[in-house]
Image (cartoon, rainbow over all chains, first blue to last red; front, side, top):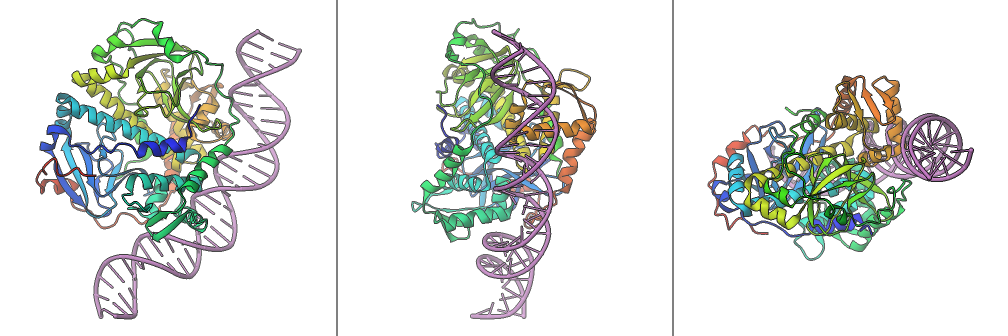
Length: 263
Length: 263
DNA sequence: CGCCCTCTTGAGGGCCATCAATTCTGGTGG
DNA sequence: CCACCAGAATTGATGGCCCTCAAGAGGGCG
């Protein structure tokens, strides 16, 4: 049976928080602090380092020629970034909290260490896989959700990723504009959705950027119930597929490694 | 200066085509073929293998409870997949072309080999990074583009990833429904967009699923010109940031590796 | 032929982006 | 301390894009 999308989103983002040091790679690390809005690197610059965020928060975003912006990911302490392209950065990364601390590692050295120290390679691989999952999961929200659903998903994600408090209050490090660009909607619509949730007593705005979730179950219900409504007119998978997919592989022998890989 | 998004999308997806074997990991590989629509693995199943696609094409997708679908990525020969979650698969992967050939590697064995053979780890890391970039880049399209822009981006991407022919004709391995779920729009809208492009003599439908691009420049112009229109009312970055971001790091010494990483 | 699926085309309505105006907030200087 | 201002945030009104519903055309297969 298919598990609900919205649930699995939160399950994963609330998952293990990998912040252990990267072995001997730390010897080549350099740390710097950034002010609000300051760029760690920019679109078009050469890819020379890997970065990791230690404290604060940052946004990874793309710009169109005339300044329109799309935020691809919010980065929190522990997240690894900077590998968004092979040669030149496709995206820009900017700090959104004051005093955001970033550590960087020279790319070549990082690759060497990753090649010589399996635990480091292992951890980098896991961080990369986690990044893939985070982005893929969020793509589901961008595509099919309504404005209210987007904001609910966002609040739940932030509650799991940024909240250290026990009273279900989240201090959002980003502006409404950031939220809008993250969810690919207009600022006004973000504001309206928050107002609606507030009038329904689902959330309470302690301050402008501090949200207390009064009724978490209601937030989840907004997402779940909306997915219920989406009846697919789409023809489902062809055929029965009653056969165990795992069995298929066992019947075949291992191929010669070289002959298989042609363009 | 910011480079146009649409351009960088194609630059990367048309990039290097890594299909070399994964070292001694190939000794544990098993190959199987799949029919159209058949599942390689399904949402909710335990993550026991890494997979790689050798021939054909596949779709990686998520389902809501009632069958609504979102395609997260199309997979082509050389692509590595199966690492969409740590324990249970969040997504399903299904073949979309007949005779799609998939090779799988036991997960534990794959991790061991990756830990002991740096070249394999290196290649896996690159495939994972590439996957991140592909998904992030596509997120830009999902968020801000109109229906016509989405379809144009899609056609250009497919032309670069699936076309082996020199006459600018692409045989799409997927149905209109797949395209719709990939771009997060209705099937009817996909069809309408294609009709518009055909009437503008930008494309020509050799067959229903075979598109010849008559005027590639026009396709690119649809995307670029639309980004031109998007004037941002958003307040741009705070402050000047004239300082070289690289210089910031040099001023600070390397921290003690252990003290830095707290939750 | 008849069935099913895919694809296309048309008509109508709802959601959200856009434009516009007001209020709120934080920072600065008098 | 308070006035002042720029940016952030909210609220209202309107129009356009696209989703939805509906129907028909084209294609493969038993």
